[in-house]
Image (cartoon, rainbow, N blue to C red; front, side):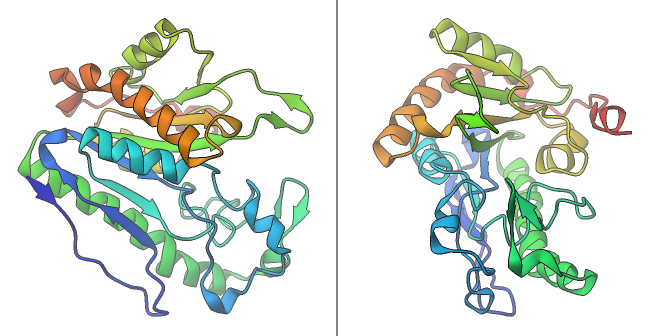
Length: 272
């Protein structure tokens, strides 16, 4: 059975969410928080050079191609953002100080440098909130039509950060529920991959997509990070998606992944 939510545009005519139809019986919802480097026309380039919008500060390079292919391989629905995280970061809590970045990887974002609370609120209402609402509505609809879905958010990370190389090929980020990350990490390691367990970031971040939409609802889920040089072209991204689909199919068949089971989040403890 295919499920698809009707499209809805913000008042500025910019559609903030890309929706990919999939089977409710797939038992999975895929997310891509940083899929796009696009900006609504009236924001221009936020004062940046065109090349800056092609860099990792604007979006997760390769993540959209990876997500779309993985959705096709697993027959699963997916939600992807259509706007750059430089406009507003959909993977941050509503009141996170990094929700709108004024400085990213040592680069000043001129269009954000003097942003006020009213403009942050406007961006949150037009772009951030519709994405979060689409996730909540999709989870509710899938749960009503099929098994409770597991949720996987797809990201990519830079090969090095501030001159320090990152050795992992893929990172699995999670909070406190091991139902999905445990078997996935083991399966990826069995393939000979260099897997980061909560590397290069920790998956317990208060207010982020995983915390608000997955952990808080008792759903099985995690965030996948693939190193950007490994998915920088569509062909490379598709190869990784095929590998992940092959690994995930038997794991997603486990009945415990489709049960609601609450685990105490580490997010509050990690960040006070």
